Image 1 (spheres, rainbow, N blue to C red):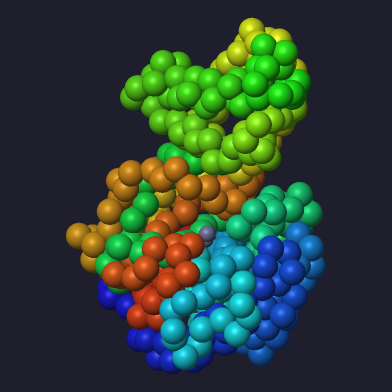
Image 2: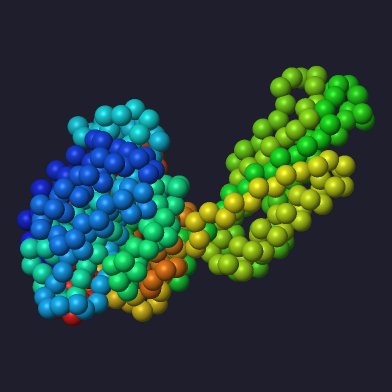
Length: 387
Ligand SMILES: [Zn+2]
Ligand SMILES: [Zn+2]
């Protein structure tokens, strides 16, 4: 089965919504206008229950099928933009400098609205569909907050599905894998407290820059000498701040960066080794240190059975040959991971075609993908709920 006819009919209307949202990007939890737009549309479609303010500014709509009760599945989109200034030059480009939809969450929101419209019209399923619109995916953990707010229990959600566009994957294609598909994204900040002084009398100082340089190079050994080469880890130092003059050794240096892993065992090992290396080097040179290791988004882990459902439905829409069921995991993060830790489900990529990359100021969501995305949501919901 290719794209659903009704989804193709919705293409123009959903494109309008997508561009409306694109022009008006909002950041993190401050997605009030986008959330209001979503809630207004859901009301217009006749969605049975609309709850706002879950996870601060998240919205959930419940669409009831035929018969009483039944199972409930969740379909999730994200609503927030990024702190970038858009250079796409499109007529619907962001009207706010310093904010833009550079990750396609405008498209995700619009496609899920399109699916909600379709499903509220047809109700060709038993049970209920919860359409989930979350804030603060790009840092902030809005998905985590919605789960903590009791969303799964409140709506009786038993399975959850997510979808993200992927530049470079042709339009109409899908990609997914069972197991870890995106990384845990932990962050560290290391503050080395030495003793500053005259640059010509280094023996009277404890030089935090010299110690910091050793920390940067020794942290590379976590990946090359501690973690099994067949398993994945990234340790990237992305900031090193110290000093202010040619002739002064400063008191302090700050080093920060990120650790990316695909399983808990490696995640724990990387944190332990990072702390041992830093503490050991600092002690060897007589300085002191503060290490702030912040466990951010967990691994996005696709459950095997639900990934199977996703692959089958994507194959019906796109043709089995256009579904990559074994895409390599990516070392970026995704806070749909919290929903997948709460309920079984699967996160799939949908092709955005040959566009600029995610988080690039020239990026734009590809509207040609809309009918494919709506078709996937609708057929997944209908099939999981025994239409
Ligand atoms: Zn993003
Ligand atoms: Zn994203």
